[in-house]
Image (cartoon, rainbow, N blue to C red):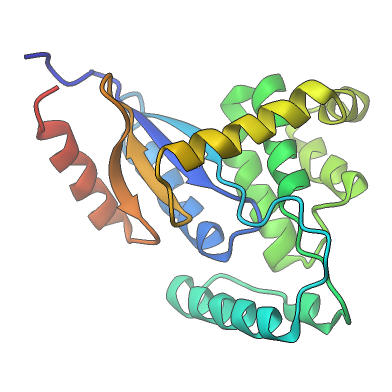
Length: 213
């Protein structure tokens, strides 16, 4: 029987435009800080609504607005609802996911922090993070060169990598965003499906680590 790793790897499956992920990312950041030096976190993009081309229907908008309100009540984070004032908004999450993979390629240690910034840009500031010009402004404070970011962001390789990650997440059996898994030689172990508080997330992590490797 193998002993649990000294520095376990947590797989955080998320999407920059997921309302509950917006609320949950601070929880993951706090867990990482609490376990400083004893836990690694890898961000995986789940693709909440990738490649969408058709505008949201009124029913879709109503359902989404309810989800935003519930997340806001639970997390007490600011939400800008001006998105719903658009007549025919298109909710395509692929560009923001691809931006996160671009950051992971250029500055992998910043993935979680850039994810937090993307969440805030969309939900708190009401910015269109499917727009490359907006994405550049979001990553700029992290010292990522605009031209380098766009050069990688627009490559076929990153397009394909984003598609492959969506497929990987699907093969993992992820049905809810956010989801958290503990990396394991025999396959990822589910820790959390959906939003939960820090204490619950830590308890679940400790329980998963007690299972023989």
